[in-house]
Image 1 (cartoon, helix red, strand yellow):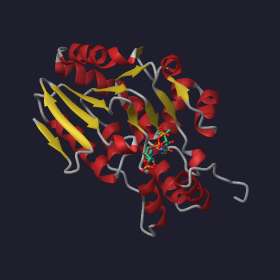
Image 2: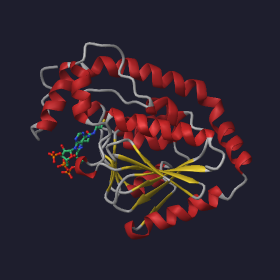
Image 3: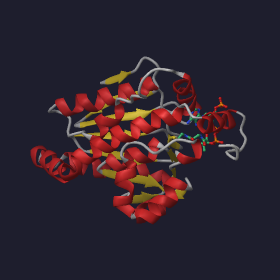
Image 4: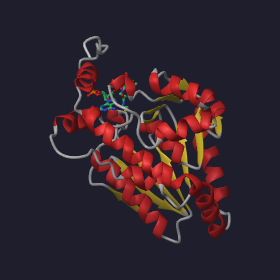
Length: 260
Ligand code: COA
């Protein structure tokens, strides 16, 4: 079974007990639009309801996981006088009941990295590059990463990644515990799929319950962090610093924050 969102920017394939969500917009480094988020959220919700699906597999394309939120969408949201910047994917991935296995090849930027904090098994190619450039864009982090990242790696390391927005490689991501294992690119998909199949063969009720029990102690805090970050994020999207950062990206130059 293959479903798509009408643009083919997200491909959803149900094979054996695995629902495969593929971010597939390589011409824009798989930058995520609102339509793509909605399709991905619907697919995860659908997987949770479907007994025949044991887990969700999340991938990008051969040389890119995702470059994060589409910056043109951010720009138009910044010009929008309306309410909160609502992204349906955030609450859905954070509360997903079925396990999510992510395969990261190439760039995983912004939400490309923060979504991994909500996945259960993450495998990366040796050339994967991770980055959290929210502050660099005049924004603040999302998807409860201000809560989950310091919890995973400690305040100072998280500050380095979130305040300086420096990129890090696959080996570092593995040392942080963000990634389970790193494979040479040519072995990555098959190696990760073997792990996914191993997980799919486990007794489903026990898998689901164990995931729930692991997440439950901080479920309310995660949900609160997502809401709080969203409120500030919406404000910052309209800020002069963000406008300068987005314009600088379009003009392929370094942003100048000296006046803000
Ligand atoms: N939103 C919108 N378009 C994006 C994008 C994004 N997040 N990331 C890449 N693109 C587009 C580029 O504008 C370019 O489009 P064009 O060919 O029409 O000019 C195309 O994708 C290819 O990107 P390019 O920058 O030429 O590729 P690269 O290999 O030199 O660099 C990245 C790849 C991912 C490092 C770089 O594109 C980048 O930094 N993107 C922005 C990442 C980001 O800040 N995301 C938001 C996080 S909150």
